[in-house]
Length: 258
Image (cartoon, rainbow, N blue to C red; front, top):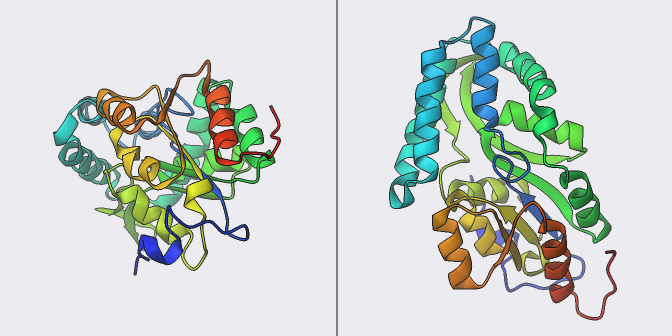
């Protein structure tokens, strides 16, 4: 059973003993890559899927990111298509392909990422990767970055073979908050002094939850929302400065590392 937001804390709570989190999106935020499609490319090279399937999903994902109110339906469709492609593939094949895929695309990680993570940790924030990309890819990235808490989209498997069903579609708007609640079930989170970074409408529910929201090179829907709610808007050149400014605003009187 997924825990309700109130059970893990609310944006209004303020408890020095409570955990403060920094929730980071991945695709378009920490890297320009679409890691799920990169993974499928590797699997196609291994003979486990067709290039035409990958291209169809690429078009669907790109359409979904700019679809406004239709985004949720398109992302759901993309997840269903992804599950269909993986149907019948052993989980070990995807896990192995994810390792090799990250080796191929890790150079695309934005240069600011290591310093951003170090900054967040220095200021007492527990880093979380929360992405609509496949969980297998996010697991590899989290390991490389030393992040212990992470969640990506999960496809359902039976007897260690994917069965064509979607288990957790974290790219669908609203699902990331459910996933966050599940990750921190039973723990108290001080959301008012927590941080989030994301680039699309799928991140809006998490950005709305925290006291330090930063929209990173946002899509048009998220940009409109960020401007309306006076959230910080950052790009790859100033995201560190915007992050430090946001933390400083929430911690008046406390000197922070710059």
